[in-house]
Image 1 (tube, rainbow, N blue to C red):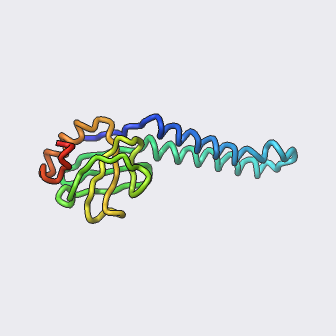
Image 2: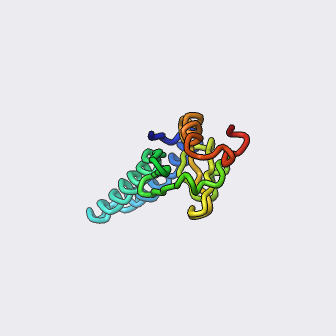
Length: 149
């Protein structure tokens, strides 16, 4: 079963601001250099298109897939497997600025497991209740924060 990530307005605004900053950085020279070589223009345009494509891949490519023995979490080129038996705690979180994040919403869950880069990964499934119900079938209930039960 596959779940997509929830995308909320503040996240879209953050990515919109980043896109604007990248656009200004890449296209600023066009306004001041009337004699810009074609190769320089091609490089700047390529940097802009590549960076925006990568950012879109990161945002739109977030998914959480339930497999037989693990959850497969994917965000663009970033991937991790979380074995069900390794999960030590699942709790709600709104702190999306620290730790390993594969999310696009402040309405998030933090899954703690020992093999994680920073002891946990933060995710934001769009259908959080259905995601938790599916996870409860695979992980003992004592691993869930009481506010999630």
